[in-house]
Image (cartoon, rainbow, N blue to C red; front, side, top):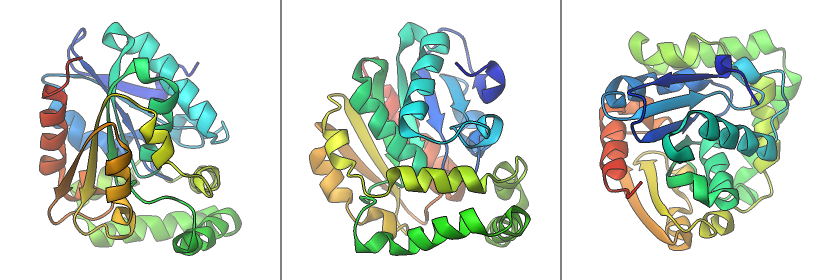
Length: 251
């Protein structure tokens, strides 16, 4: 069980709980825009996945990530249930969590993760994963930091850059999801599902209709003018989509 240094908690005790799962190579701090907008009504838990942040010493494995989320929900969530929100790598973890622990998930938000990570289209990510393993970490960190500084204004880039980057954990995450199919895992979850994609995130929208068809109680929402890190690109629209979905849940 991770200690409390591996996750942040905000919002009123006893309120419905939302758990946030971050993307590859970044940390729980990427959810700062949502914490600032949703903590008025919900108990928010943003946690680090294995291989990242405070858990960088733990190798990333899907099973390990799912077990940690379940333990944190049991410890911190009202009625040991939560809306689980995952983006990119975190979205695949959320689908695995819903398949294994449906009783703990009041709903799932799967953001920027509606492409199956198997097949020809994953070839660039295999090269990316190999580079994350082989190149010096200072060089990789400089590339990521420079990219985010060029793409985002300082206040948007800060939650991504300030905690540092975890390239080895990110490459472990890629290897864990490569070759697997996640639409069948999503199909095992019986609760409400929101697929939330940036309109401009074309690569990760490739199979969104397949994932929508797989979800037993699914809906799809597209965020205009958003790319892959949609919660940073359009924080207000992303947060509002989560709020609307949370308000629709029976909890």
